[in-house]
Length: 467
Image: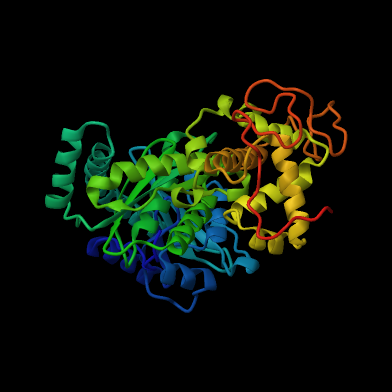
């Protein structure tokens, strides 16, 4: 949601000293990474740096493919050290990897570059002697960090919650205690994982790592909360974050979630609209939840939804899944789709409405003569019984078309075939369907209007001609 600062998380000076001492005793490059293979500490080079190590030092974490390769070896479940084979295509030399654990928790990975996969017994003993102190220090630092994160998370969830008094108190504490600036522009993003078959703890670890990376930005301050199946990120900035920044950050989050132990977790990201400071964060969060639903429901979004780009679809996406079906389509539009010229007239109507009812622009976009467009528009009015010069009728048809696009994107509109007609119902070309009930035309003669004989018409720039 903003440009990410490329820097590694830094361990304490004590932890760095432990890593340096081990590296000097081995004469090999040593690194310490967290459970998501993000760098914590790293020793100096000993002439054994490979592209993967250089990338990790510059970016603060291993490349996603490297991290996936390492995690795919099951290192998080290892009970003893072992080698992870190198891969030339990833620029990765073989590593001797030591899983760090304390009280049953996987804390991270200690890695030593060993290109030939041979480590003499003395070196193995040196690593074994150093490991308890390193693991203990990592655990102590994580306990302190987790306490701070829990406090931050509780305040953020209260800020986004339903209780006005709790929101006001959370806002005060975030500013006074957490030193979070109440900048004028606030935007909330929601990252959601669904159907993961791994433990909630593993999912939370991955979410925490990815979102923590994404909140380190030059242009915004952020706080986040991680729940069993989703993460919430609040960002505050002096200037609105651009759609390009939001899109780039969302894509990076999805890319980072590629290291999730379960590839079927199906991650999606949704961002709310910009609101005014911390007081508007709840509204942005509610909008982000709708954007997440859009990203989940609409494959065309490729896993990233944005409230500010949903337009009128945001209203429809508030509906439960069972309500999103073709019954939402207005009767006049269904009549048009069932007509023999349905696809052509649907395209014409969509273009005409998207061009704000401008005949010249619509004719140019459709690449047809204006007289041909007028002819089609008269057909649309005769079939639907609506007046394209009437604002309410235009809204009815335009919203209906957008609803149809949503249904087709969801694959939920299955009541129409590729020609825009319902299966099993043939319509004679050029003829309107027979009498209907509801809002559609009922046994009208062509040209008659729906409201007490008001004639259907389209305002013309010049006399019509028959096509």
